[in-house]
Image (cartoon, rainbow, N blue to C red):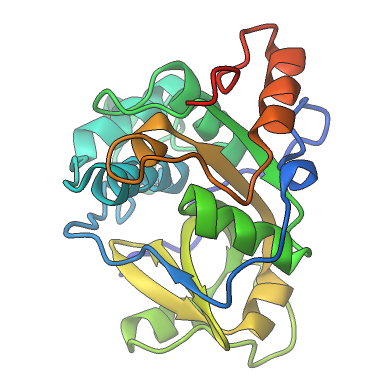
Length: 261
């Protein structure tokens, strides 16, 4: 069973930490559908034993950027995900077994995205990232359609685990948010009536009603691996000038999009 009851995963968003408002840079209307979920390899990356869902998710983002942007997936493995978990959250695999390891405490989505900017995975990095308004459907759908898969924080519980095991959509059967565990998944597609994400080594569908109840934060990242080679252009639905200026103002680093590449 991928989900271990009581295991920590995604830590709550820390609103005191500065971040870019990516929704501000979204322009236009999102297409009716977009789907980048079908990549050759989607591994569990340790998330069956450890609370490294943020790190596994970050690895999946780099896999998608390489496959959809360059035409060939650069696979990540368990070691790369757990190395990131150690760097981001102080995880020590030798401190105890699964379920009894005091360093297995999870991490915030923002910390995982910061790692993608500063360090990256397998040489694949994000140029910048920002938070989107999870309640603004057009905003996050436009970001996904033009920038690729998004990092999403959701609540999950026993019902979601059982539906996952049964190959069923996540549905809002009880009309209440699942609160057993905060979990990071990678939102990789949408179409009328269904949204798609990677979690626990597989692709999982969910209804918009479930999303409305259980999704509580969403982030997008821009990577040169996604926009450069095969795709050849920057995202047309995102104002990269605004995005880059926010990044430069926040970090004091050069605007990664100033050249228009």
